[in-house]
Image (cartoon, rainbow, N blue to C red):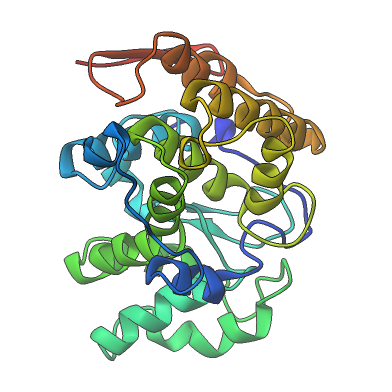
Length: 278
């Protein structure tokens, strides 16, 4: 893993500002999941196990410069983005609440685990970049916990609750197939779904000004291009996200090829590095 290539976001808490609300999304509370009568509804969605594995690898190529997303359970460092420690398979942060939720879930399932003693400190540092009560042993204990399959499963479950399931649900509501659902997922991972102009929901609103999704009678390709245009605009508002290659040389490559079902083989580049899934 090349940690230097990991995405760095600014200090404001936009990426995970509404973690609890997003959890409700995964249960269908915020996004009403409707199945259209179109071919897109019958197509294999991103939650198909094989498609989901592809999605995990695609995100890992951008977030960790590696297709081995399962190697990231143990990942932890402060990347200097104002969010304290960033860790795990989707970049849970000590400063934004989702790391606290993860460790709480792990502790609910396995009391007395090696990270349980840090819960009071995680509550105190939430909303800050502080390491108070975490240093010097927290990173080492995180890596120890990452060897536990119960902690790995907790990471999987929180990733799905907060990011993956909401993306698939919203994508299906909009009549999008696997590629569109992945495009939504990647945007949620980076931008979260807060109220700021660069959040997922506002990227989507920006796209809707110029195109309609299939569920509203629009062209899937035209709409996804509009969404990616809006995504690039959002990325360029933040210096840390100004390299848009995960859109330009990954997602647009698949879209130009008409690969709306995200079928293999897939070839793409992120930050100049080439990747392949056969």
